[in-house]
Length: 265
Ligand SMILES: CSC[C@@H](O)[C@@H](O)C(=O)COP(=O)(O)O
Ligand SMILES: [Zn+2]
Image 1 (cartoon, rainbow, N blue to C red):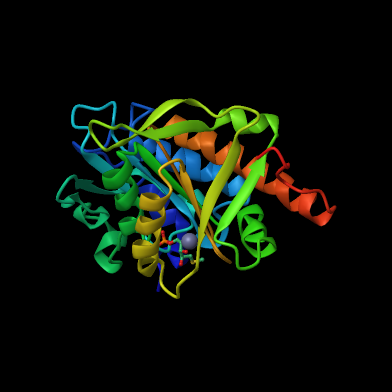
Image 2: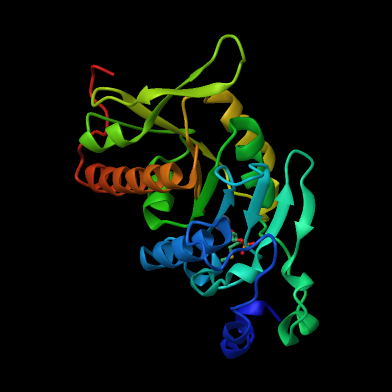
């Protein structure tokens, strides 16, 4: 039985639980933000039916190597802070599991970390991300289908592109860094990878896409959704919103026979 089938009353009763890796009084604490943002994403139809999610690295906290991850198979809009897993980078040392909370629910249900964990970790380790969002947005799925068997989604000359970061490889460090924002005339290119039966099996192709597309802050997964990351949780949120806007617009443009890029690209 998945935890989403457990009686919600039981989960609400223990919502006040707190420990050294949680902070009920800080609305910006990663464990609280994951719950708040998942509710927001649920209302946008991005994380319904337990799909999708978000992980946050505590970049502003005392230990910026702490990563917060939600459990697998839970209704995302009902997540509670005490249900978070916490791992420490770079070794992904497990510091906390929801089962550490001695409750009626955790006695009977063994939580597992999100199946997206290895994908989130790839964004942290390869791009030094501060947060990673995964949605099952229908705009993302539709674009992956309308772009047929293409391995890149493209769009340009749309004002909203300016909300996205311009990224470049630092010659000295070899790391991808933000060097500004994309301009109206820039072409946004997002790699598309093929879906696999199990989320974790996407890891290799996601990592390859991240390596091959240093300018991207997102990867589309055909017939599945999108992964979007940013230097902190708020940047990741803005990038995801801007991308979803562009993906929705691209679906409408394609369906109306309007090309999403122009000759000048
Ligand atoms: C509707 S099931 C979706 C899952 O298989 C997966 O794609 C997903 O996005 C969420 O995985 P989860 O392990 O619940 O965090
Ligand atoms: Zn998914």
